[in-house]
Length: 550
Ligand code: ATP
Ligand code: MG
Image 1 (cartoon, protein in one colour):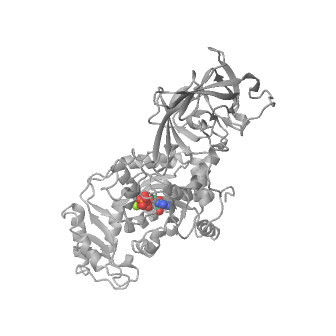
Image 2 (cartoon, helix red, strand yellow):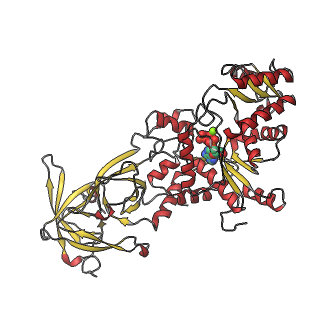
Image 3 (cartoon, protein in one colour):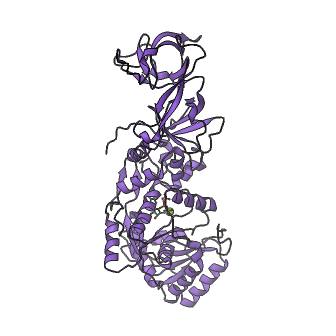
């Protein structure tokens, strides 16, 4: 067993015991997404769990597309899922598609029919639901429940051939209409859907339901530990029934863990699709989306997501994780990796009236004060610079230590400057400051005669590069509203702020996804779609500080 992996959890303990007692020789897990949307951070938890578990026990993990519903699935989703799993840092042993097993699934359904364990039912979906009963009332048997094996085989064959319209018939398991577990009250195994499938085309017009397909998929692949979320706990006995009655060679077992829920985060592909379809966001990879592609675009790293998944652990009861915990791991990961440079998000021009016209000097600046290995760079300094608008106040409150008339501050890596004069436009808005600098106070010169309380960042105006900055807030406030689709009423109208300012010139050729810490503003990442040679566009991944402590 590979000892370098994360802490223990109840699923790992089960696997360890199965390996130790020889019940299982090779651990095989799978990540089984339905290609009906892009993956989100909840899926990342499942991906990490499945892949890391197999790695730890020298086992294997399949990436399996549970592509059993042609109405909602497509190739774009398949590609995005593969990309996201790879980006997270995992390699699957086998790439599998449930649709490859359709012929075997059909054969196994015929076995069930021959054993008298399945029948073709003509009730509508609505009628089936009505007759299913409730937790306190038994179900009622379908009038079609006692069709003969021959009749069922014939009808099932005709279903496959396309002789019936959608909804006209289904194949149901014959289990127990009185079972206290509603899932065992003759669940539907197959339905008719005359819809082309993205891989099998029009070969099939009947498609297996999750409860029938999933255990068979696991068994066919020899999966040993089939891990799913808690909602499926009540389906476990049905899972075992399928494996047994379909006479599968392998016997996989299902284990349930708590799904990831996160504050202020919509965590369901169906809902996320709605945000995309209604154009509330700019696609699945909008940086405000909790999708893996959205988080990637925002500037999150696979390392941060993997650490997060490991640290939140694997529990048996549902809870909600604070989204600031994920942000914390992004900061931790980027702290030593991202070069630190200056960016001005809301520029205010400053003219240093006593600095020689036309002169530029080059100042030394370290690229990451916490990581000397990242080396130094030279930054230009001359008579005109930009500072942040909010680093100046005309009438400051007490304890404001940045620029105000008559006050002196330090420019990071440069000199002390003093605010001498305010220039306004016709409307009275401050458009420029006139300051003086003190040549004695150069950073690193050992000047100690005077101290200042504030240090602000700046960019030389003649060398500055224009840039766009995108700052984000939660897309949905109160995503925890349990009422279906209520989340649309909680859309945060200020979820994105777009600013135009400047970055240091040496950021010029930054490639897509390149990450920087902009002093005092946080960690930013170059947007892969909007950024161009003419204008860099940065997404803020996280601000520098959080009130959250772990
Ligand atoms: P959604 O409800 O968002 O559509 P899903 O469960 O229907 O999710 P699938 O594609 O069927 O999506 O899921 C693939 C795997 O990811 C499943 O094993 C599922 O249990 C797991 N998974 C999905 N959501 C979460 C979550 N929030 N936390 C942990 N695992 C999850
Ligand atoms: Mg699903």
